[in-house]
Length: 208
Image (cartoon, rainbow, N blue to C red; front, top):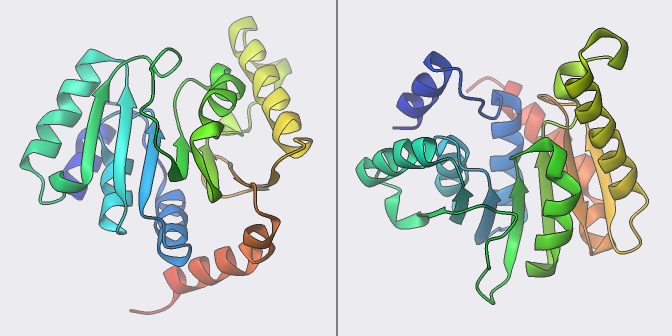
């Protein structure tokens, strides 16, 4: 099913996490024993399936009705359907239940990353992590793009500054995929992040 979802996304030009990011995300869920995830941005449910396969239960918010319907169709046929809960709503206005999560995964409108972080970080468990994808945006340079994209690039730069200077989180920007950031409240959790990611990448490259 996961390969089928990936193929559908690629054939229809629907953005999904890269293979490197999928490996890192899955590996971190296993190492940090992530039990539940709040995902901002479902798309076709590919990343939700990756996280569910790694052992997490996932609540995923998607505002685009067409993509939500596609994701729902995939989930209904999936052996992981008991671990994936889809929510059709706008994540900027959605009223979250009063529960907390081990992982908040943000992969939606890049211009809203700071707003998503601020809105949902209160639902993070004290030892949890916030994982954000696509913070490089294809390494585009402001001088090479149109005005709208330049504005988006500026907002991504603001987001990077925001997480790296945050008073209550320690964060690392990791150059895999299209750039990811991992943020922890608990500095002890952050301490082993580099070694854990290196182990995940080496394991991926090791012969099976």
